[in-house]
Length: 231
Image (cartoon, rainbow, N blue to C red; front, side, top):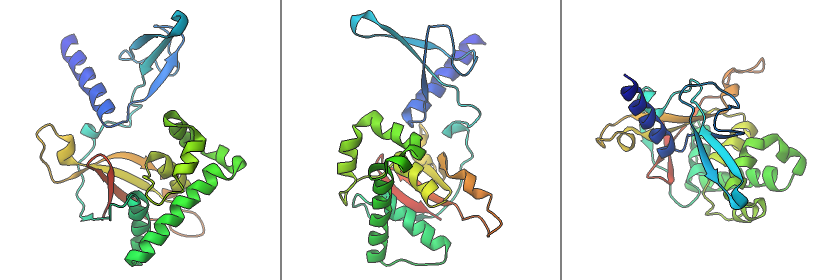
């Protein structure tokens, strides 16, 4: 039985790493834990310069589930132009359609650029407001210095991702769910459905006294670098 559990645990970790949803935390020793006492929390040691020891472990999923555990959902795909703006295009297209508005190609492009610049203003131009988006800042600065990010985001072919979704979901009070194609997830490479892998702005699903909550925008992340819209 222990061997079976070991195999399932290893498969779960590989799936988390594959889809970029694995979370890590530093611990002070190979035994102690920061946030959980899960029996599957295993420290991994690293030797840095001057033999300073650091320990990291993969954080449990906290009940959110893996893509493999999520229910496969069915939608139709609305293709989005792949010009570097695809994330922003898909988002503005989805928000417009949820309001019964159909955007022209030009309008879609202009609105997409406005969303990109809105992120730039929050993260790059307003130090006080920037602090309200700590998760996005961490995601950005893990890969590159903030200064370089702020230079890149001004370009029209800037590729958006999780950092921008973290900002825009709050900025627009917009619930967003990101999916991957079922066939990209299964080992057999087949399946016509879609599997949810990330959710942003879920706090805005409740609505308020002023009106109904905004409809969820569902984005499809496929081919490792492109976003389309799901309806």
